[in-house]
Length: 374
Image (tube, rainbow, N blue to C red; front, side):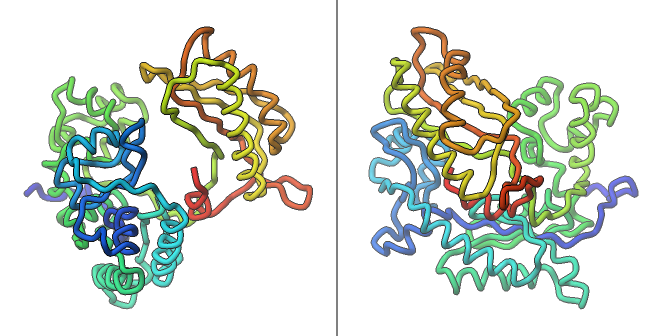
């Protein structure tokens, strides 16, 4: 195993990543005992354009995974049971889980309803082991919610998240500092935080497929190929990740979108759908006491080409009327005449917090953000 050199010595923190197991499907199986042990798929209509939100481990054995089309999932497993999402039930389970996590440290960073990072460095100052905290958390989640989770423990967020996936479901895996460098070596570069599918292809074109391959490239070479991101790739390939656990972060936008069962061809119908979405977005802005300055619409065509167009105003945008007033022009700029669309969406960004008639730069809890239905 490669030895960690002085160049690779990480900042020593105690990070836990907790990830619920097949979360939406597990909640359904918990609440409906007749579904236990069966291939359950939570998502859209398999007879339309629905997609899989998540599925039980029984369904995963057939090769089904999140974001797969529901129709494809039914082909792979005809006996699968499709269940429409019950977001309020999942939000309530998430609230229970996050409350458990916060009983150990205030440094909890939710990433979604079903996963979060914890920094337990201070909690371990008295000699308590991070792995023991993780084990206790998993036990409490199981006892108090009837659900299972997996956890990874390491010295940074990169490795803790990788570790949580190592022994799913209901698993616990630890990557100590002396093993981080060697653990990463044989992994695909796509496992690294920040290395998406497009970057994987670009790296493959220059002969880089594993993290060990990536380490053969100098920092200068990576920066030449990928700009500032190249410096990040150089560090994470060596197990270096200085990102702190952030209990809160700024919300950047509020939006919603719809995928249609049949492509829309009539522009008046497109506009009606956008105006209905404007109502939803305005309601969310009001509930969060937020206003924005930029309205964007997203359009996806039948060939999956996607475009966005935006308009920025000087005044606060918070009402349905203010959003709707911009939609005809944005639609004209986005959709050529005689074109049809399969998806439309609206987003309001450039957010400020509005309170008692005043405006201040806003900061909101990430948990509040992720609990807002999208």
